[in-house]
Amino acid sequence: MATKEVKWMNKPMLNTFVKGALLILLTAALLLLVLRPGKDDHFTVQSEETNGAVTSAALAAFEFESIEHYIGYADHIVYGQVTDVAPFEPGSSEYTFQIVRELKGSTENDIIHVYNQNNTMELGVDYLLFLQVYRGGLYPHTVYKVLRDGGLVRMDKERVTHSNALISQDVKPQDLLADIAASPALSQYREVDALESAMIIPDFLELKDLAKQADLVAIIEPVEIMKKNKYMAFATVKITQQLQGDITISAEDLVCLPAEVETGRQYVVFLQIKAGMPIVASKQGSLFEANDKVKWNEAMQALGQD
Image (cartoon, rainbow, N blue to C red):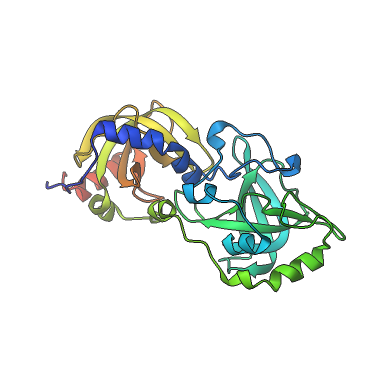
């Protein structure tokens, strides 16, 4: 059958791109959320090099000059309480957060998932959060990450606790909420990073649609899982059979796959190239075990190879 022609960079260029952009891609896709260690260790934990300093060059290129600048850069500012904490990846947790009051932005639900380092928030405690939103990768819901330089403020009855140099340590919780609610910067928003938009993929596609959308369909075997969290894994792979597409993935290239993949097992996968990174073409349905006869037959029919 005819395959879709895909313009692809040569292998040396791909390797240079993937390795040079790895920190950016991992921080965007895996939400390695503490963008930079704070000035106050109260809310920071030392992280590995890949748990890194930046998520984009634009964010790292400037310092926040005022609280108005900080408010303007946040996608959402919310007040509420942590209702659950779950493991996300080594060093980071998934915090379920019940919103009591929205000061900026409009979240899709009153309950959201916030990602930050371990032990930065406690169950049952109230917080004011300055957040960035992210919708890319394989997450089953909208992802919210704490803005760098002190985007997490603990709100006790009569005092606040934080590491944000732009907020007074003596301000009362209700006064802080009132000051933010009155800020003219609430109408300002940051420009969304192009990488964030590029990594958005559909929740689900039928096999016939996956066959049309995929740049590469192949049987792969994960060789080494380089980074993994609750929802996705970055792995090097061996292609044992190429079913559609003429893209080359080398032994050093990273592929973004669902978290359930295991080394030594073979999978049929539908891949797209997003911002130079091979990633499954949909969050669900674009990868299955090669020994699944029913799905194999359905995939072969969708590819016109039955």
